[in-house]
Length: 298
Image (tube, rainbow, N blue to C red):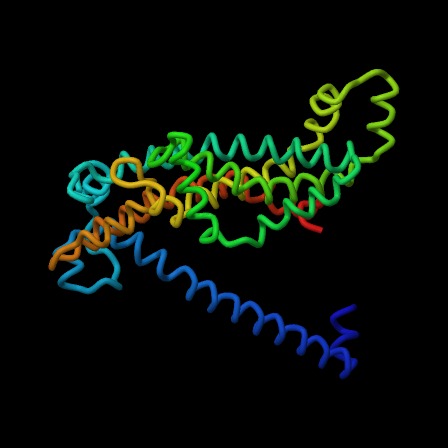
């Protein structure tokens, strides 16, 4: 009956046609943009499984005619980078040893800072919070020389621990911002009732605040892990040789090529470097968006 009414009403029929046309245009454009965006990734995936002679014969952009996993093994353990024929294995684990503790510690400190600055306000707390926010806008290049000097003074220059320390401190502005804005939404009466019942600072944090925190903690973990893993500037400037993370190794990997470009091994190396942040995003992406909408950025 409703369809018949639409057909008998010219205005309604015109509106329906306009609606369908708009849907077709929107989804068509989204499909085109998706293809443009995903094409480089698809090309890299295909080339990582194509033998180098096939790439040389049929070009970089083509479907695989045969599958080979040799490039993955070479990129992981035998390809020569900066004079060491150990592949990317060492650099991959360097990034893990740097990223995992830096993510956990910066997230915990950000949650603690957000808890203090939202529920235990003191004179000057807003000034401190504003000062911490400057770290969000200060480019990393400005901190290179101070960090190089500081790491040298404390004996952590050219080390994974030093890079982890850098990322912990550099990430505090973001994690504090996220957590503080999220914790503002927790009712103050809930905290006051707990204090009246005799709960102290740490007990309130453990028993009340942390159980309410999974959405924002997932946001900060995904944000920090992805940002630290993909960071290049500090890794290439503050470390060298066997202490470099995988991002620095990827650049050295491409620069070490001679007249023969090993596109198959290079593609496999890029995918190896991209797997951990992709895995973290696939596992926590749904909760990441949900956490943002619950107050991570207001």
